[in-house]
Image 1 (cartoon, rainbow, N blue to C red):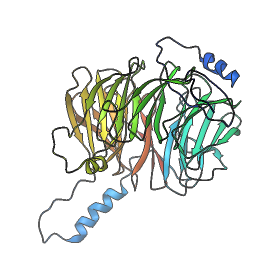
Image 2: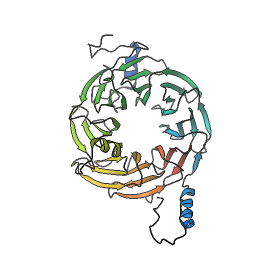
Image 3: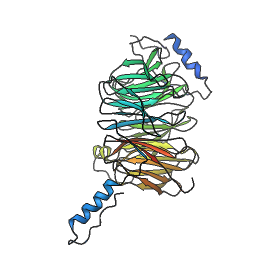
Image 4: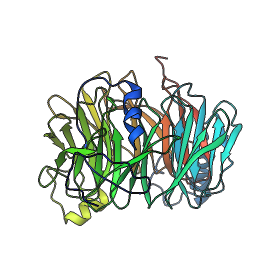
Length: 419
């Protein structure tokens, strides 16, 4: 196939075509894009008295182990649970996917299963509700993607691709994007299945997100490059690479509310702030910038950026590191405001929609809420017997749903003095 014309858009069913994204700031009717497709603390025990009885320590550990602050535990999975999503319309349904090759859609109020997403061939690593909560997409490591209609509890579409790295629904249309290990990004209209591809650089597509205008997407790759794609034209409008790109694989990315800025994170220990209209890097953030590093390889292994996010109500950003630091930066001055230290590596962060509180889940099995203005911990919730692998908050930030290596999903009621 000839890819010389970067601005062409072709739909070829099984054929893959890949290109980059344009950053128009104008509003898009939700149907426009679809039309285009018609052509296609366990507190540390004190070191102290050598004569202290061993059973005292064991008792303390047992107490920690038994602490469970959750309101509800979902126990249908028979292996580690990797991913969770809440339905955006009502926040009353959760979908979880796991090592047992299964996904379940269930009610967060009582844990009742609405339906089981059957037929997967490998661990289910991606689960997502569509923008209007009418559809659920589930994807497994083998590359089998299925879409289910919530109302009828029936599978309405499926497709098998290469190894799946990430999935993302369009914010206002029934369009599903998926990033592959070969670097390609597939885009389907659901349930019709009309498809086109954004052709990658030949290395893994590690993360991706559709920007709020619905016309553009930002995709990160294993080689450290970031591409901004025009979804309508199917071409890359900006490629951030070389010195401007990361020196290791992208691990995460997030955009601000209007999509004008993107924050990227990488195994190189840095987060980068990018203007989506120009493709220019506006800032680089690293908590270890001033420290001597034994080697680049060592730094990548121990100080990977795991999660990033923008505060909606204050000019603040948060960067979470595998070594346990949550860094809060001032967006305007790019000054480090606070370092919130965890006892174990952070897996994910999420800002509350309408406050300056940011929540984290970590490898020690705890969810913590932090006040980004002061850098202090507001509250901590425990209950899992293993690491938390994913979590999500409801719109009001009154509830967190977590999934873990202990084969469980849990619902926590988040209490704060100001609520």
